[in-house]
Each structure stands twice: as structure tokens, then as C-alpha cells.
Length: 177
Image 1 (tube, helix red, strand yellow):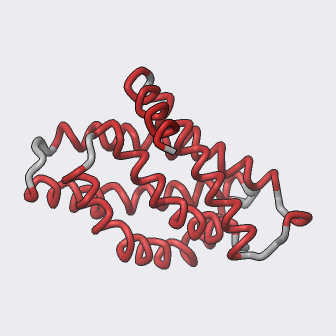
Image 2: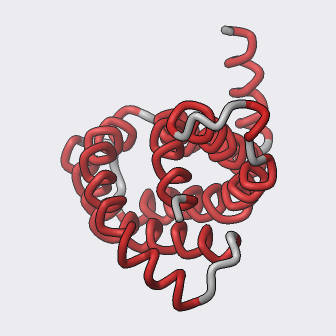
């Protein structure tokens, strides 16, 4: 395990952007597998590989680049590693970024699942408030710790590890018709 972590760190120092995107896409996919197998109890024979591939593509093309870029912007907006700076980053993240990100994630998932614009809006009205409230239960303490203790180039990885649980919930919510 230690060798795997060292390899990850070495890759992260050489190609941080690529590793962040691959990590995000892979872990969104893991979240979908956990969602289908543990939450929805589909079993291996009924596992929807196409859905997992869609969710991974959202991770690779949307989650990784958007969240990775946001952390860079946030680090420029609020400079420092003090407790006060961590709190400011968490507030900006949770009050500014998270509501927009969740809406886009759910909307993109709906579009990739073939929902019409009207169906997607209806699904967003139904699912967005629950997702945002659930977000506020989980993410503020994680983000304060992340912004205070974790270097910038590892933040997306920390978030994605915690996000396996979050992604399981979110992919279940996004794919619940």
C-alpha cells in the first residue's frame, strides 16, 4: 500500500492535472458501482455497465476538470493556510461552488440518461434540494480539514476518496427515475 501511495505521489508531482482527472473519473465510477451493488442491490448480472461508463465520463470530463480548476481558483482567491483562510475557503466552496456544481452534475446526468429538458427540470426540482442538504451534512467538515491540512495538488484526491461515499449517493440520486 505504501508503494502504491508513493507511486501515486510521484505521478501527481509529474502530471498533476492528468492524475486528478483520472482519479476523479475512476472514483465516480467506483461510486456508481457501489451505488448499484450496495444501495440498489442489482447484483452483478443486472449491473448496468453503460450507466457506470456514463458516470465515469462525467467524472473524467466534468468533475475532475471543474473541481480541480475550482481548487486552483479558490487558492488564488483566499491565500494562506490559517484556520481563518480554511474557513473562508470552505464558505466560498459550500455557498458558492457546491450549489452550482450539484445542479450541473444532476442536470448533466439527466441529459446523458436521455431525459428531455422538461423531464430534467422536473427531476432537478425533485432531487436538487435533498442533494444540497445532504451535501451540507457531509462536506463542510471535510473541506475545512482539506483546506487547512492538505496541499493543493492533493485536495482533489482527498475529496474523491471521501466522495466514494458521496458519489454512491449522488449517482443513486442522479439515476433514480
